[in-house]
Length: 201
Ligand code: GRF
Image (tube, rainbow, N blue to C red):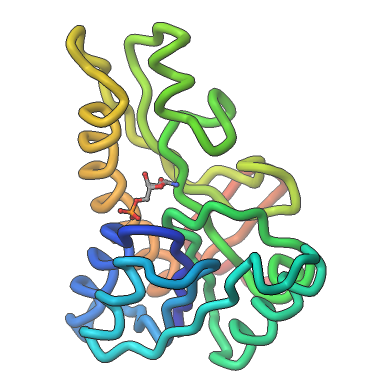
């Protein structure tokens, strides 16, 4: 399967996918890495790995619909079977989400703590268990059908950075597992329920 990965920052989840995809048996190939801003470490990493990259710098567009159209054009050019939003911090509109299946990884157990500050919000709420969720994208914020979740216990001395680091270690494994399975086995979405494997209609 052809996979386009979208990032906004360090790209450690993306790097884990690149590493997994070196194994031909993995089933997915990262055909491009895209970002919504210039100068990210993730794009630098992808370039060094020899993967094609693109940037649609949000501030250059001044208009969300135009930016979305530019993202959609870049993405469609790589003919992806799956788009993976891995630490991509902007909401993708219908131009992207309506054209390609897309998954997102989120550092909390959805539907708790959606949005851009999930780790901070979970800590502030005082939960004892948080974690990570991989889900299909729809047009809402962190709202699409859930594919997998892994729990991460909160430790008494955690701050946002220490908790996020432990969540990210778990995320990288979950992302690699889930994207590989989606690529190799296919999937069906029935309402809010996702199953691996293709069902013959
Ligand atoms: C991850 O925790 C992801 O869930 C969140 O942003 C972080 C990205 O980390 N949305 P990285 O760029 O993959 O290192």
